[in-house]
Length: 354
Ligand code: IPM
Ligand code: MG
Image 1 (cartoon, protein in one colour):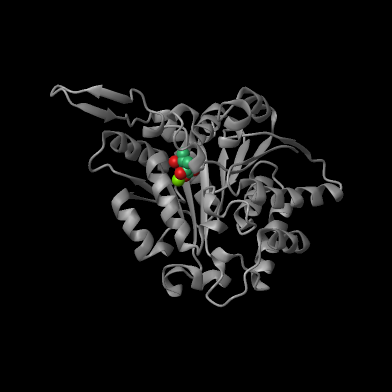
Image 2 (cartoon, helix red, strand yellow; image 1 turned 180 degrees about the horizontal axis):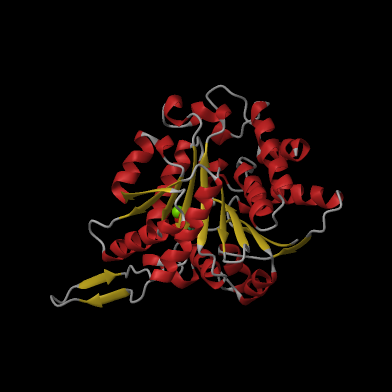
């Protein structure tokens, strides 16, 4: 396993080093793991003057899988857009063609009370959001600023999806649904957008190849509402880049804390970038307060999706469950009055439980 470690910014280094301890543990058990280390985001800008520098590109292309902390921070807010940390993230996704972003939102029973929704609405929640990650308005050209007919400055972006892009992400959606509860909800805005009309047509046509999957379609505004009204109606959701960005943040709150959720971004050959879905939390960076669980769970996804090591993924996930059962809580998942532990003590507990 040739794994590139990119700690990134903010709390990234703290949480990634806890996950790395899990890899080191696997190594001592005889697993052949080779770790390389690099920079992405603000950390890369500081060292190389670019958020996705050539040195990182080389390492990323050579790796089988990448573990990323998170990028961004106030220090970089005033940089020109091309140099900002987020561009590093968008750059590596595009460079490696990581078009399929898997964002599970599942609730650990121990955390039912930490959700902002009533426990009975979220108990047993287990949704997989599949977000297209290399197309849509995120990358569409033309974009920029221009002077309109009235002589006023306007900003503009372009949303588009080609049939082949829709097909390949829809296939990930159908295949994922086949391995789960066989329900797939495709989310679009086909009542307004031409891009979405094509999206819906292509997904519908593909459903003929998956007769066992119950396919439904939902407009994105309704989906946002249904996610907080009755989230358990969903099994797998497949959607475009911008809708998936928004809905996955919303869904993360159902699970109690954004500090719990991992993600995978995969290419067509199961090479992947794995990262917690939360941001760099600059307000608590370097204070040993961040929750490393989302990063450790990202490692579980790596073992499952890139390396096909379901056994190791299961070990990591049951380790997380036992630590939660034992009542260990970082600040983000603690209820009022519960004792709070730091990042490294949580890491100790995780490594021991795994
Ligand atoms: C995410 C983030 C990124 C995105 C930002 C940091 C560019 O919000 O991974 O969801 O919009 O894709
Ligand atoms: Mg986002």
